[in-house]
Length: 323
Image (cartoon, rainbow, N blue to C red; front, side, top):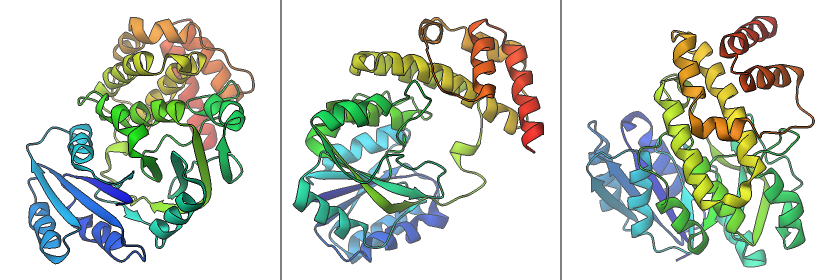
């Protein structure tokens, strides 16, 4: 079997049929779909069981609620395909993507294939084609997490086709408690372990934009999950080195910006307490950039000086100017 498609499912009854139809209508059929029901309290179970009766390739996996990462782990432990494709239960595969991925595998057998993700603001940023050997060392790994110029490959686990033998251990190593940065925690070690990477240069995955999406809401525990992810990456991918230092600083900006866009209801002292965590500080103090925006440069300077209130003010001003 070529592909195992893993779908973690929780409270997505409204979207799940569209997700599953985007797979069952593909023009390529050498795959299985592992529908990992993470104890969803809505009508997802009935939809899952209905598709299992309709098509034997669609395999139900009902489990107690344990979070997104635990559902992906449960799915990959059941997977039999040579390659893993992760799909969120409220998103869709692009038409024809399985056939295109199979063609790429037949021609190149890469460890990773990366497709564009529709409704995302991040593309691969590299020319389409196969990267292996020196090209992996010079073009892919240096920007896997965050380069000195502030560039990075898309962090999404979705939109990627991952060789199971390379990816599986990295997915199983991710802490179940992480809901923010869970993609990075599995994808980055896989890129550093991979011998080849194929940038498809075309859309393979479609995100459903919805206001209640997890990625649009801020909660203070995101900092705790970032810290867990950073500790995990330090253990699994020590060769990320300076990239991990920069990533910590970058994600502090991202989380503070997300908090402001979510209403800015938390106190500066609360944010500062999280940013002053020793794990983050060990990396923040070492982070070095070259070409980055003026806003980022000012923000990073202030965070390094533990001037969180001033950094927050910079973001507020930048948001007003942009608006």
